[in-house]
Image (cartoon, rainbow, N blue to C red; front, side, top):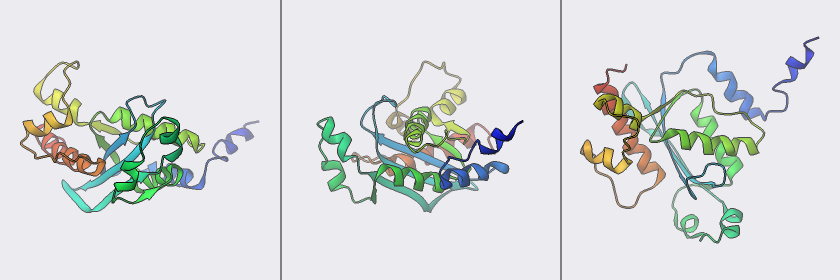
Length: 199
């Protein structure tokens, strides 16, 4: 009678099945995520680059980073966007399906950290949908929300990543990449985590 339940995950790609299997236990690893995209509409825009860095035991793991520039030539051509960013970038480059799969394999069951993380998760979920996968299952924390909670500010008060970095005297470069943003977010997360008394 319930034989259909056995086939629920049958059509998922192998990497997605492997990802789903990692949620049997809680992770002590955090993955700080930043994406660069063609705009701020997760349903219409695409990811240009992904930068991520792991945190374990309150330590930023410089050797445990993920970065990739997505080769979005067709999207850029169709929307009149220059490919200069792709050509000039020194980061590893990959087509969207391979980049998203590699990121999911890197992410595992870690807790996601970001600045306005809902957008990053949503645009990645849209890319996953194209691969016939489900949605990201990871718990996610947002440093902007953490800052407002620490300062007891209303939810309508917004802080850019640059503003938050300035408030904590964290230097940021003028030439911003997703990886540099991820590192700044990681520093901010550790400071806010300490101030909020989160283990």
